[in-house]
Each structure stands twice: as structure tokens, then as C-alpha cells.
Amino acid sequence: MKLSVKAKPFISAKPKGVIISWNILSDTLVDPVQQSVSNTADKPLFSPSYFKKRISLIMTRLKEMIVQHKYPIFCLQEVNDSKDETRSFVRVLTRFFQDQHYIFLSSTFGTFDKIYPELGILTAIPSFTYDTISFETAQIIPSSPNSYISTTLRHKASPEMFTLVNTHFPAKFQDPKYMKQVSEAFWSHHESISHPLIVCGDFNTSSHDPWYLALRRNYRSLPNQSQTITHLSIQRRDRRLHHNSVFQGFLDHFFWTNELSLALLTNLPDRLSDDDVQLLQNPPKNNIHILPSVENPSDHLPLEVSFQLL
Image (cartoon, rainbow, N blue to C red):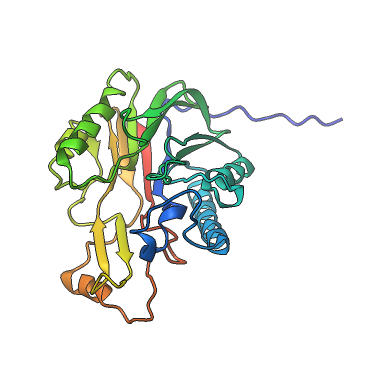
């Protein structure tokens, strides 16, 4: 009788890996012509068949990144829930990550809220690579459905631990005082963390926003934020608009402590020129909408980052 012997894991003093942060665009916000419509649980904004098509594209993209990066950690935002199981990102992606041998943690504060049904977030961790030591999920501030997931992890081939935080900030660009308050409240939850720290997500903040320094503090961050974009949203023309509304910016970020080294793997596009923006504002009348597309089923680009403890 031949016995199979499992190889002992290689013990590395400094764990490394890949983390991908991606706002996958809530089911409730897809159709640009409906952006101004009040989102309610009993008023679906587009057909279930379209939902199935887009979630299929999202899962295809996730599978591609799993193969390419050999089971990275995923931090997803706008993972909306729904009382209808067939149209719930949380439930569909839960089954997806189970099949891929991931442990997943989700935060659904506000997902059934009539104003913010899209604010679910999800962290997925490959179970055969990391041990989950502890986790916490909470609202950033009590008055907001925006939340975070904090997870302390240990690589199975290393005794060292690090903490990963996935979050989604409110989109209240017109209220700098409130955004600064949210930034300060967010960090107050994580000031006592003693492990190396990585924070990522959709912060709805660009480097030129007046509260950015309150958000970044003394942490290291991804470079070239003034020249590249992670988010491009285009709302098609309707009766109240003479042209399409175009928004571009660097709203997705990674912040980390000095005990870590991070490198951006995603080739981010440059900011659109004024001429390109004008072309997008005035497309042919039969151009219903440009994003999300088959190539990118969200209006955010995934941020793929390699990390290593120093």
C-alpha cells in the first residue's frame, strides 16, 4: 500500500501576495438614465436578464484574476444585496467564492436602505493560503450606512500577521466638512492596530479634495493619482441634459504602514483629455451607454496590488 505524504510548507519569514480592490458597481446604479430615479426595493431599475449577464461578466473577470495572480485576496465594494435572491450580488458571489475555496466576509449595512441599497462590501480570502485570526465589521459613523471590514490575517507559511481593511466611503463630494468627519472617524477605528496595516477601497476622494490630507494622514499611498484614473462614469443624455455627463477621477486607494511594500500591478489609463471628454459628452444618439461594457463590467477599474512585509 502506497501512502501519499503531504509536503511540508515552505516557511517564509516575510509573507507576500496580491490584493485586488474593486468597486463592481451596484446592481441599482447600472443604467445611467435611471441615475436620478429614487432607488427603492420594490422598484427594479432594469431586467433580471441584464443582471445575469453583468454578474456573469464580473465572475469571468474575477476568475481571470484568480488564475493570473494565483489566488489573490479580493476587497469588493458595492456588493449590493436584494430580497430577490436571483438579483443579489452578495448571494451570487458568496456561492462563487465558495466554489473557488475562499473564505468570505461581508458587510451589508444599508443594503436594504431606500437611499443607499448598494453599500454592501465583501472581502474574500483564499482559505489554503491565509489563516483568519480575527475580523470586525462596523459602520464608519452611526449616521451612515457606509461600513468597513477589518481582517487580521496570517500567511500559512509565516508566523507574521497583518491587518487588511476594506471600506466604501459616502459620495458626498459637496460637503467637505462631512467627508473630513468621516475620514477622521474611519481612522479612529484603526488607531490601536499594532500589526502592519493595509487599507483599501472606494473612498470617493481624489488627491485634490480638501479632506484628502485628513484621509491619507502619514500613510503611504499609491502614486500618480493626479495623472491617472480608476473611475469613469458616463450618464447618457436624457430630456433634462443637452449632453452626457462625464466624471473621471482617482477615487480608489490603497494606504499602508511602513512595515510593508506595495506595488501597483494595474496599468491605469491616463486622465482623458478635454477633447476626449467632449466626444463622450456628445456621442451618436443611438449610443445608449458606454460603461459598464463587456470588457469592463463596472465603472471602476480593479486595483491590483502586490504586497510584501519588510
